[in-house]
Image (cartoon, rainbow, N blue to C red):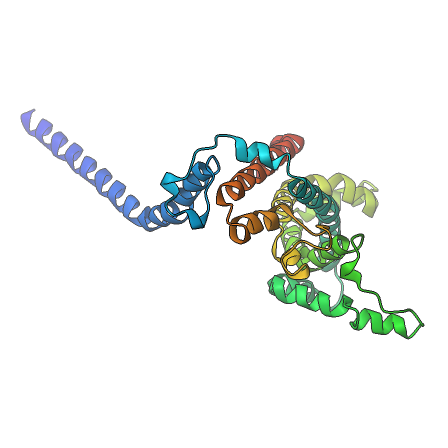
Length: 310
């Protein structure tokens, strides 16, 4: 009896040591990620949150001695006409880009998923703009639409006078939207394509036997089965559009012009933080943007419901 008890205690002790060793090994594996997350993400996030309640500039020295202003930076944002304009521009940009981008991406995914010839070429061709630098794309569009650019030269063949497209407050933002759609539609096409290939062919075969045409199959099979993919693309696209910066920066030469028509929230945040050195105000703008994106994501999750689990 004592021998059995001794064996049982030794076995329990070995299991306990193995579990502790596994736990230590596990922490050692994730330790580089935890350290990098603390240093480069959680730490700066915490500091930025504190700074959003202070009046701080890089020129003032230590941020610890910066005066505490409470919610003044947040209140100031909603009475700042340039921030309101930037918020409006960003909302218009998102409303224009997100649905257009996703509808085009789904259409392209359906095309390259069909039995057409050369679909590998089309997949590559549509995806290439995604891996091209945004700055390079912006410069290319500037070359197309500048006063002596390709478009004006083409229109000149028909007697149309050259036009400075990006200097028109009505056209500057729509042109950036067109550029964003062209540059990123390939990414969402690839994600939709992966979702389409996960749908079992047996569903379409059964629908065909029951007499459903292609449109009915799309509405009653493709769209419901793609719901998690649509939700994923919608969230990623919405977050990306609310964080638009580089296109607006390059096109407007960093000033959001003409007349703030291309000023976006992140561009205004950058200008406040690194041009005007109002770091506290810039941090407050960043957290306002975070709250907006979080609320919109929760609304989308509520709209798509439990079926979005992938």
